[in-house]
Length: 395
Image (cartoon, rainbow, N blue to C red; front, side, top):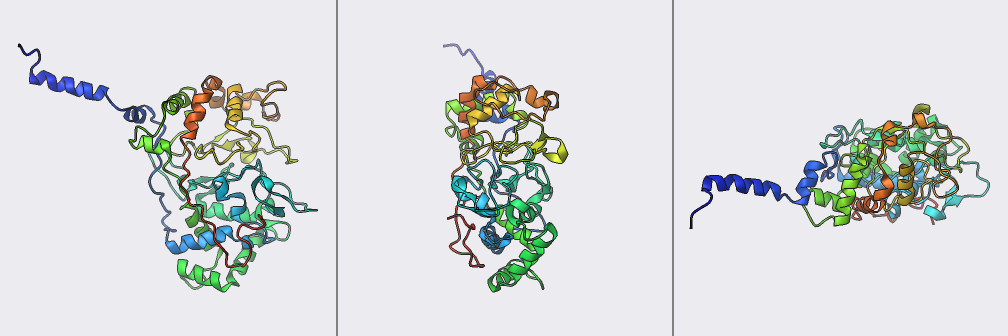
């Protein structure tokens, strides 16, 4: 039998076939240039390397109500592991609150308002600011809905200073952090823990308080979702429906803002989401522009309700809002979710140019489910050095 191809011809044919027979994963990695898996570890800032001593101190501080003006609320009250280190209510109740999650309520006769915005998860905030290539600066990492802090060290202190979150009426913004430092200094166990973590002559200070809380928060990582495993080469990690959803997520334009390993560009956008009726004052966002930072889409299964005002109860509502492009509907679903103080020509152009999201709702929601990772640290300390109830009045 005559040979039809020489070995010299067979080699390039084999190369072509090999290139054609790329796995779905490799195609996704090549085509989804804006999406990628999270790194296996988070980077520390140069002046705050993570150590076991800092992490353990930070965990206790995170759960200790001694950081609040009234000694009744802790960081963990509104960022609880049961809710993916977020909260399952629209906007939080901080100072003068009792109970946990949806059961939380104000104590009688309080004059404290609701917290201004929805409590975002602190899972994976160690990766805030990371871009599609994996570049990140831990010091300048954007924090909060309005970017009012950079880096976890700065972010950790601001809730202590905020009236409705942790400060209360008993202290001014200038007084509360020194007061908290004095409280910590008065407890022998905290003096020992700060000395072990930081050394120095006076280790109990506001800078080290922020560093310890930040060190603990950098350990709260959920970076092995089905999407992450898929992008790292496990072709079975995503279902066919989820793979279609990823393509639709990109096609309709969600990826224009929800990009990179954290599914956020960490930029400010005006979407015209309605205010929460529990707050009497309108929320005008970053410097009065009605702009808010793009949130991460990771672990959405734990973090409903959604948006900065928490007024969209589930992912169906969110996609419906995007499908309408900021326009009102009648009395049906979604009415009231549009901010009456934001004109349509003020909306972000990327928002107005979204494709028909509604036609792909099932696939996109399935894909968003692939961003959930249940394997994260849920440990709650049995006690904290102050002797107060871990988490505050959450029982």
